[in-house]
Length: 441
Image 1 (tube, rainbow, N blue to C red):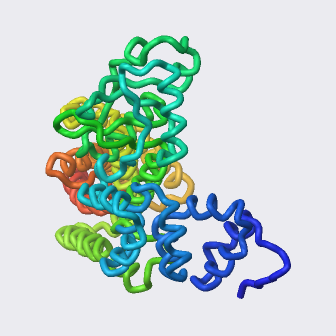
Image 2: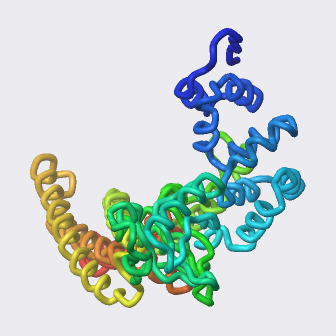
């Protein structure tokens, strides 16, 4: 239990360090002990879920203060993190103008630029002088606009005409007009642009903010770089969890209920378990060969793990490349050729190592008998086939999923490995049947 000394305030660093393991009551107690000079910064740095948790446990008078501290886009995130009846309680603390702004943002999909944007941004008119524009920006910053990276030049109908950086404003002669110095070629996003596409624009151009336009090319808000940092973290977390063979969590690990966690994990585990049953079924088809040459079973783990590992490598590379926009679906043929060649080379290397291991070990112990060479060639060719197939399948599966509108991250390493396990057994025993007939079989 957290101590509550009344004589000294808690530092922001101490509370931040202890925050993950504190109960709701302890978090609230620690938050109230923060000095007023840092409490605002600490609150703004919390996730929407944590902010909502605090606000809902505050008295109504305190609640209003903290709710009104948040910009509209953060408020929209907070409202989406709570139950509908709790959301109405939070919205009731806002003034009419702020409530309208938040309701507009809530109408957008959470993953679209419209759902990420802040409708409060710095704007100027094209006919203003530079001095007038600077004075007007100061007024906006004092009243409503928290973030001023750029000044956006709008006409009377709110169409975006151009943009000015603050550096341009302060370096330009005061008697010049905004229209004379503004940059007219502006990179923008539409309201329905997916957040991953928005994040790629930030990465490619190094912007601090991007303007969001509606279908009539009217400016509706800005997406800022701090919003995109959160998006990138969320997307990366989701992809990593899916790559581990489970559904993505909607909350941090310790904030996800036990049965909720089981629900996220059991689905894919059942799918993978049923998939592995196919491996047993495939092996049962070759039970006569196994009974005749038990030595074949010794190499099953080696063969299928090689294919699973190569497939997992390929799927991971392609999933990440798709996420970063490094390739498109139309590149599938280039990917297939590249991965087919990679699979062949990797398979040859691993096959040669496997053949050498069998021959060397047989020369020492004689465990494989007089047929060691043909057994080694069987294993080597099987590894070549399985690794080649695994690499090709692992690279194509994410592209197929993207083609049909599914998340490529669902082509997780465990899923690919399970798929290749079944094919690996079929390839191995088929090669063994062909090469060992009349000797070991």
